Image 1 (cartoon, rainbow, N blue to C red):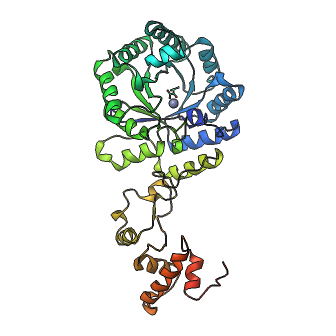
Image 2 (cartoon, rainbow, N blue to C red):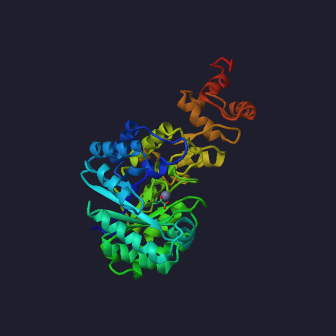
Image 3 (cartoon, rainbow, N blue to C red):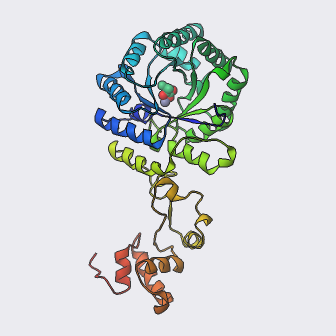
Length: 386
Ligand code: KIV
Ligand code: ZN
């Protein structure tokens, strides 16, 4: 195994689809799964089969439709859930059962009304049972972000001994700071017996806006699987966003981590998910937001027109975005105006740029944005009807 290869586990169709209003039909899920395959994700979490007949059927159909990625199904730590997952995965070329239970004292006491000892036994029993169906079993220690580290280490060690091949350490409530989460992963990497028999996975939620930072801290400290969603959709404030993780590793290639993501497919699938799930992407969202490559102040526009990399650390073409955009507003300078006029075919040496710029500013003060039609009006070549 390449030690710096980071596996991308996409849970758009499970954690992402749990979001109110984001539910998809089985047919839509198959379309998404095929796009995720083309994007290069390693594992697709296709659903939670026991949760509804529709979710069960979606896991069956995705297993038939997709051949390259591992298809994963979620369960709680009980035999009925695991039976349903195994049944739903029967057509998968490579199927994974993802089982688990709460690991924090909060969950143990108030969710399960149980004890650490009993929860540990249930965790081990679930993994052993899942291993009867597949040799690819992932265990999640829910709310690991708030769990006692020694108990968490004991649990992780026990489930690896029981046959777990991936151990997922979720920050279920998005509680940790990057240093804390990274230290947690490092403690497990350094102290759990036989940790090298399993891949450590990070699964972070975004309640404090730290999901991506925490996931990266996890990888730097030994995790080699990142669980994420397209556009960062997911429970409450969402999950780690796939496009951020992929582009962080691509941009900081000196760190040496590699994923299998074809970044040129990112923008397309981001739009697809946003439309299908009726979940708009916030304009200033990193990587895929409408403004991620839009420059609007005069200083930035001038810099970008002189050399794109003055104000762009990413190349929009790497994401499947045709080009950046220079938005004309009252904050734009002559350079940006000249750029757009030339684009529309005006010969700048034949016009008085200073004079046009003054009229442009008067117009821009009245409007939020100046579009091509406005420029034609400005140059006396369009009607000013709108
Ligand atoms: O956030 C979480 O803990 C989860 C688990 C079910 C993996 O989504
Ligand atoms: Zn989650």
